[in-house]
Length: 218
Image (cartoon, rainbow, N blue to C red):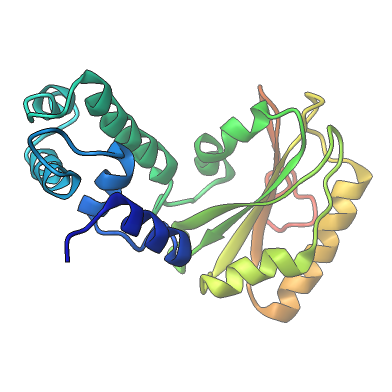
């Protein structure tokens, strides 16, 4: 049966963005085919071109496909770059608090607090980074069940907690300390250790572990 963008769109909405094949993802990006090629065939040519290209020539090579102009070539290249940036943290090895800062630093730019969970495998490589909650300019509500649900679902061996301080002062508040203590107690029961709680602002960070606050340095 001939594939159409509408069919792929409906299937993706029902089953999730991980469902489509590469060619079908390209169909969603392009939106339509050309006068010479229907969208399914055009998408196949795009995937073939991507397989034979690298970062330095991908836009140029895409524009060599009849029906792919500058705008569509840029759209495809932009989607590839966004995907790369959003997944660069996967499998990154975390040995010290400073190792994780490059992957969470951008959250410091937000005007509201965001509570972040970083799940780790047995080798302390990042599995995923989750935004658990979004609060106000100086507070966010944390539900332990949401934190541990993600960790259990991913079969995580450890976790790191993070949140931003839009105020510009990354020192922990009394509520930060109390929340961290409660989550540490819960982690002991559930069996997934919390390795650190890191607070970030635009210029610096505060690690509970580095300051020997609630955590023990091995």
